[in-house]
Length: 200
Image 1: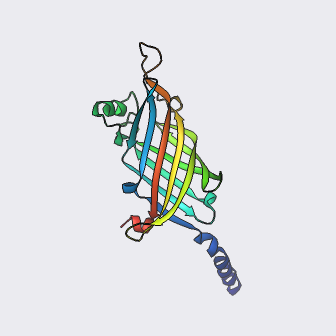
Image 2 (image 1 turned 90 degrees about the vertical axis):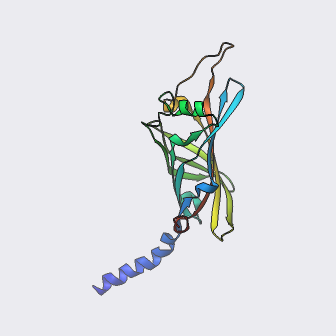
Image 3 (image 1 turned 60 degrees about the vertical axis):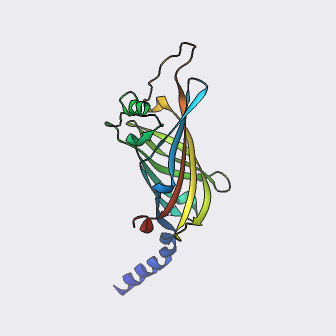
């Protein structure tokens, strides 16, 4: 019995540094944003954002590629600064937010792409469809805010094809082409703080 206890204690002591590497962080929504950009009338752009979202990051500061992240966006919180258009975007023609109230992302791998740059691959679920999706992520460093809380700052970008998520609504223009572009550029800027602090 003593031998087993000694072996178990040795395991805990040697494994402790490994387990201590990962720390749990939460997205600070007050200082983060989820934005998108899509072509409109062939040459113009329409910008929008989602204002209701949450995210968690299990951060390994020694090796970021071992980190894990999850993100949830409430699709009903979409805004393009035009109420009539926003209601249309919430309708079954587009996001159908009553049927699909959330869009989620869960990372499956993180690979280095240069200094402070990473490729994050994971499962993105949108409009009831799940697709493997890659984000280009940049670590912008860590700083202490005005309250002494140390935050890590990141920016993630990707480009999505609407048809991959069955978002196919469009309308032809008299001059040729379609009202909406097929690709959507997504930019996510986040600050993350320790969960114990974010929960207060």
